[in-house]
Image 1 (cartoon, one colour):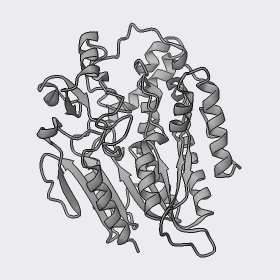
Image 2: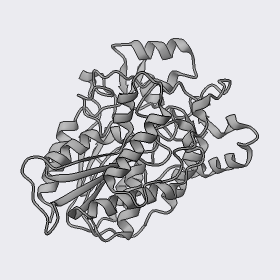
Image 3: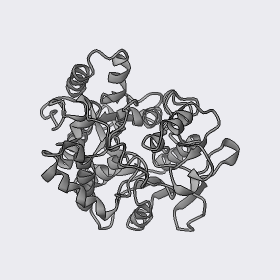
Image 4: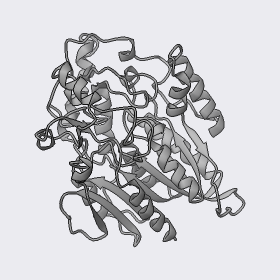
Length: 397
């Protein structure tokens, strides 16, 4: 079993996601969202085009306005006091890139933070995302990279200093862009997907037999009840993610970097992020490391991940960028991530979704021993993370 979780694999080694469940329309490509289609468009035109595409794919759903608003790319003007650029509207701008199987909704809290701190904000929608899981069957990582490059170009037309902020796969794409684009002045990275298990390369074999046995192209077939993130997950998504990690630069980095990662992360190889920080040679570098034990590494601030008084056993890959106040994923949010029980039995799955006293944390064998467990979807120390980010921004050259 490929050791991936969250947007890469819903639960480590727990299931093949009910292989008897038949594929439905959402498990096939929509035909509208596989390649990047924004070339030559202004960013406002790109947003309009994406919204029209989302409306077409989600037509007839009762919460379509909510779906479109959460999955569409977006842009924000800086609020409060901000510095103007030299011949441009704003001095600083940031491009936000979401993770694999996610949507721009996951970047909304970060976007509001950067907006309050004087940044022009743009957020892209990666090809294959925001519509239906089947749109990841034929996507290529190069199209994701092209989307980020397009966003940087749009942002650079309005600001003097371009910064990139990415979550998970979005962090990897941000690093890839920064390595070849000297306009990028710094990086903000959250749960970076710099390394995934090498066995993921075998997911590429699904291309050879997927046409004959379509069900075998899927790692997980799920209810897809989350309107801002795919629950079903196909093999090609893993293949493209692995290929992206193989294209990442391995040399030194000479720009400011702010990183947030979790030792408890069961989606990516989080130790790769600690190794990455050692290659950052700029004087301004900072990492928040959510863990049970202090790594005692220079420029790494340890944040204790377990909060038993809140029934939180650990952090999780899915939790870092989300505020506890979020209406969908937050402490009192409408969505409960219990996918690790879905293939086991309906009783545990239903109990997890309805429970008010479930434990929260990453889906690991150790945490499951405590009893009913929900995957943590918000960062209980989000405010402290924002404070650290603000301090970092104040020290930017």
